[in-house]
Structures are given as C-alpha cells and as structure tokens.
Amino acid sequence: MKRPQRLWLYFVLTIAAAAWLLPMYVMLSTSLKTPREVALGQYITPPHSLEINNYLVAFGVLKQGLLNSVVVAIPATALAVFLGSWAGFFLAMFRFRHSQTVFFVASVATFLPYQIILIPFTQFMAALNLFNTQWGLIVAYLLLNVPMAALISATFFQMLPVELQEAAALDGCGPVTFYFRILLPVAQLGLVSTTILIFTMIWNEFLIAITLTQGPYTQMATPVLAGLKGNYAQLWHIQMAGAMITSIPPLIIFIFLGRYFIAGLMAGTLKG
Amino acid sequence: MRYTRAHIILFLTPLSLVVLFMYAMMLWTAYVSMNNWVGMAPSWDFNGLANYITLFRMERFWINLQNNILWMVIFIPPTAFLGLVLAYALELSGRAEAIFRPIFLYPMALSFVVTGTLWAWMYDPGTGVINSLLKGVGLGALAQPWIASPKQALYCMIGAAIWQYTGFAMTLYLAAIRDISREIIEASRVDGANDLQVFTYIVVPNVQHATMIVVAMLTLFSLKVFDLVWVMTMGGPGNSTEVLSYFMFVATFRQQLVGIGAAISVIILVLAVLVVIPYASWSMKRMQV
Image (cartoon, rainbow over all chains, first blue to last red; front, side, top):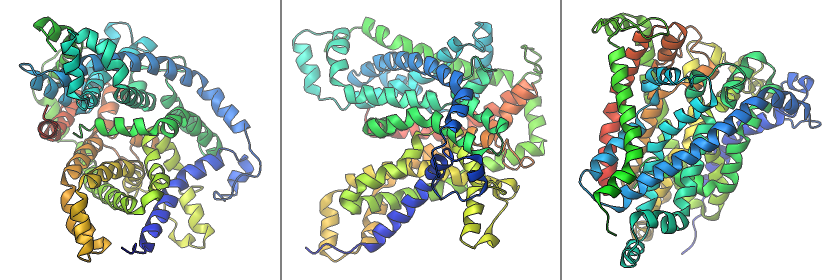
C-alpha cells in the first residue's frame, strides 16, 4: 500500500515543537547573556559569549536551598517508597476482606488536594517542634507521599506474572521473604518509576515548602527561586540562571530516565 | 502464597496509619472551620457556620471561586484537545515520534515555580519575550499588557499551564490510541478513510477512558493551583488571578484568620470530593483491584 503523504502532520508537529521549545530556549540563552545583551530584547539571538557568572550569582543565592532540597527529598523519597511499596505489594498481590476498601480510602487520600490539611499539618509540626526544620519537611513529605507510593507501586506490581507468586508459594516462601527476595529485584521498573516520580514531586513542591519553613537556613530550592524573582526583579538573566539550576535534577531524570518518569506519571493516575 | 492476619497487620499498618492521620486532619480542618480562631495559637471558640457566612458575603470569595471555575473551563478543553491531536500526529509520524514526544513532555518535569518564573517573563509587558518577539517581526501593534492586565492575567497563567500539561494529556492519549485494535484502523484504511476520518470516527470514540483520566486530573489541578499564582502574579493585578487555595493561604498564614482559612479548605475539599470519589471508584473498577 502506498504510504500517504502527510505534510500536515509534520507541519503541525514542527510548529508545535517550536512553540514548546521556545520558552526553554529563551530561558537557556538568556541565562548565558550579559545584562547589556538582555537589555537589547533580542531574545532569539544566541548569546555572544557564555556568561557563566550569571550561574555563579544564582548559585550563590540558591546553594543552601539546593542543599536543603537534597537533604529533604532523598530520605523522604526513600522512606515513602519503602513504606508505600510495602503496603502496595500486599494490596496488589492478595485479596482479603476490606482490601478494596483500603485501596479506595488510600486513593481518595492521595488525590485530594493537600491544601485541605495544611492548617492542622502546620499545628502538628509546631507541636512536635519540627516547624522550620528539615526534619519537619522530611516528615511532611513522607506522610504526604506514602499513599501515593503505595498506589503507584501497587499498579506496577499487579502487572507481574501470577506464576511468580505461585512458584514462590510452592517453595514455601512467605510474604515477607517474597517482598525482599523476589519482589524488590524483579519489580525494578515499578520501584524505579515510583522513586523517580516521588523524588521529582518533592523537589518541585512549593506550598509545603513555604508553609513549613521560613528563612534561608531551612528553605528548599523552590521558595528560594520564588524569592529570587522578587530580589532580582527584571534581572532576567539571573532569574533564568536560577530557574535552570533548580531544573537540573528533574531534567536530568527526564532525559536519562524518561521511560521510568513517564511510567510513574501514568501509574500515578491509576490508569489501569 | 499463604498469608495470615498477622501479615495483613504487618504490611498495612504503616499505610493505614498515614491514611488515617490524613483523614483525621481533614476532620480537624472541618472542626477548625467552625471556630472563631484568629492568630497562630489555637483558640477554640465555637461559632458554628459563622465563618462560612462571612465568606459567602465576601466578594473576594466569589471572585476566587469564579477564577477556579474559569481555570477548569479554559484550561481543560484546549489541553485535552491539543494532547489528543498531538498524540494522533505522533502515532502517525512513525519514527519521528522519538524526537517529538520528549519535546512536548519535558515541561511536566519542571517545577511550577520554574514555569511561573519563566512565563512571568514571557508575559512581561515591558521587556517580556512575547512583546519583544512581536516588535521584532513588526507586529508591535499586537503587543499586550498580558500579565499586568486584570483582564488578561488569568488567561496568561492558564496559557503557561497548558504549555506544561499538554504533554501529560498527550501521553495518556497516545497510550489509549495504541490500545485501539489495529484491525479496525487498517480495515478503515482499506475502505479509503483518510487521516481526519480515522481521527473522527475511530480515534475520538475510542479514547473516552483517557479523556476521563485527563479531565479528572486537570480538574483536580485547577482546584489546587497555587504555585503559579504565587510566582506569577501574587493574585494580582488587584485580585483578578486569585484562586481559593491562594486565598486560603493568605487568610491563614498572612492575615491569621485561621477559622476562615479552614472554611476555605473545607470548600476546596467538598469540590474535590465531587471529582475524586467517582474517579477513584471508576478507576478501581477498571483496574479490577
């Protein structure tokens, strides 16, 4: 069969791709321009020379925030994925009374906007003396992401072949051994996807970060970047350099582990 | 595999505690909303529905609610439609898909704070990218105040969100298009259907479940949008871009009207429940959990 000529297709895709890349392009090129170049307003022109100094200035401001983001996001992600997949495994593999109820109640809790618990959450953190501390942020993100991690990992574990479970049962393997010895090594797609998605969400999160912390010592990167917008108003080259720096971890994940990121994103909608 | 009651307890206790804790917090919020609590320290002074009545009498509340509704109405259809068209184009494009797909999806990896910073500049009336580009190609007459105009700012912000979320819709639609049986599409091709006819008569009717997911997720996003508002406009000019979650934050943590803030939270909760409960039951049926 003759392949149809699809000029419209490449037309639509190219125009759309150009529109989607333009913001990223101007962000990157402006982050490398001198203030004089930026003032010309010719944003499409590439930078004459690479003005790395912008990055040094932005990094100087963001440094502590980036460090805090790392210190908070890594343990919170690790614990949330462990506790979440621990339950997700059981929900995906076994049918017992009320297993559906547990799943339903957990998914409702996951999808509801977390703004609605922000007030008691702040009080709770203050009562534990965790307000404005990194521990407070870790606890907050852990609590918010355990149900999400359970649902995403359960979605992946459901796709594992039943034979795996049957073979394990024949060998007299119990659920705990199964989780550590068989599931963790076998279900890597699911676990890596869950980890990556939750890490990215915590890294990018803003509302909890500005509510539970104040001041430069405990703030994560996102509130610092938002502050940069105020302190460096109209200094687009510094703002864009800051935005680039803050985006580096999620963009690296997207570029090198995109398959897992997308799989996690899809599982996070409970797309069966 | 054999499991006992002890296993159920062992595996589900951590999740259950977290989930119970979250529900307890929701109840707590609901109770706070019925107290005249002003200031950061808890003050229990039961006043029934007075906070809600105060809210309903505030013009600001109705503007905010209206903005959330505008978000849903203006954000969701173009995002879903563009996502579907791009997904179909990618499906037809064969190997070019590998190049184009990440281009539409990468904004999903960015923080809203980054998106907000970037797009606040795109839309800046003085030295922003869009106006500079328009002037650069001789269309300076089309330059707009964008984000600085109370009439346009909300739509500008929604534009940034469309940029960020189209790839998400596209990915869901692409998966749905791939689930359509090849035979149906090939049979229609043999019968002489062109790309548009395949799209209209085969693709659109067969991706309804993806539409459900996209609409549910984007509705929830529209209900909780906060970061973009904070970074791009702080709710302004005036309160033209304020939404409920922004008002909730300002009322609670800036004006310290905690009771009022809790009442706004409860209203967001009620609106979200209308979407979340049907969605969760629907997707559980599909997953056959």
